[in-house]
Image (cartoon, rainbow, N blue to C red; front, side, top):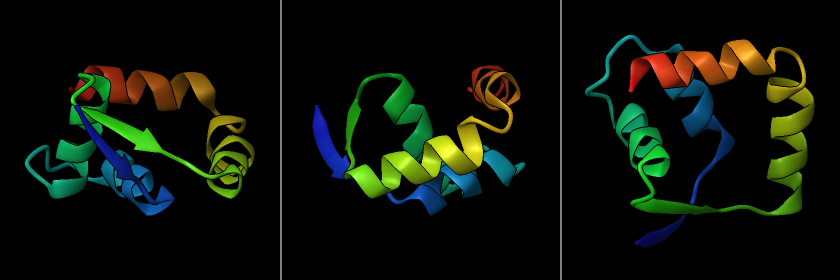
Length: 68
């Protein structure tokens, strides 16, 4: 397992891209498969929850599940 600090922009870029071969999509895929374990600080967690997850959690989650 690899530990890595993942910036919020990686999540947003992976969510918006239509290219599954992009670097951001690969990083998120590796996270879902448990190969990369992301490390966060409270500011990133708060931003992710208040700006992305809270606005549309099911859509955000399902988009990732369907793509990988």
